[in-house]
View 1 (cartoon, one colour):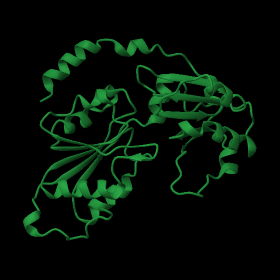
View 2 (view 1 turned 45 degrees about the vertical axis):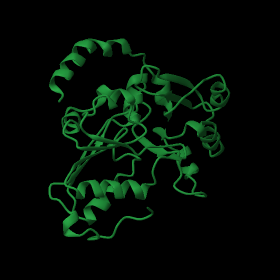
View 3 (view 1 turned 60 degrees about the vertical axis):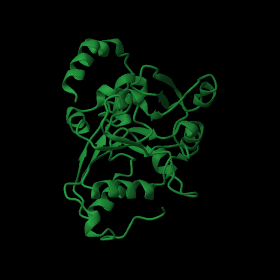
View 4 (view 1 turned 90 degrees about the vertical axis):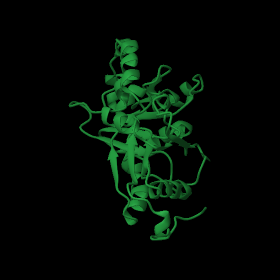
Length: 278
């Protein structure tokens, strides 16, 4: 399957009313970061198409009667081509089903939301988008790094380290002059390259950098360093991914949140959740 079926490509006998699609952001790891609205809609899902960044802990909240289809992509290993995902989503909606397209983080941040909503809109399939906590926000919060600071960072820029096609490079001179914070997504295998390019194009080698691995999860790791030293420090680390990279003076303003506080009343809340979930 290499292309989306043409508009009107299904006959009337294959079309059932009531089909709709919800694009839901699952947050950046910790399943409790799922919003109340997202959880409510998820419990009514008949079909769930979920990505690689949707944690196994969150999958426990999937309704048992739903059809659950993994459509994840990780580091070049794609379970399904993007065109096939779009076709599957379209076919399920045309069967009159409530489809949840569950994405890691926030659907509108480096998650190909526009490509998938275009498919539905062109075929008049109703859809809605439920935002999620993107990795930059979640990882920064759990690691104690403010994304902005009135003294040193009045702006923050999100950058994907994954290039759309070979030969397409970032505007490194522009990024190296960024006065605020830079947050790189999908860059675990490119940290040394990112640091070297920023330094080569004028960023101070002493600029703070932090790598947050598996942010907001129980096994979160944070490595704080400077651009000039980050490569050698990574040699001593065992990172699993996914990870975000924060560059800028905000890293030097890092605080130390007590993450054990977030576990308060956890068991009680899980028991309550099991009562209200179908």
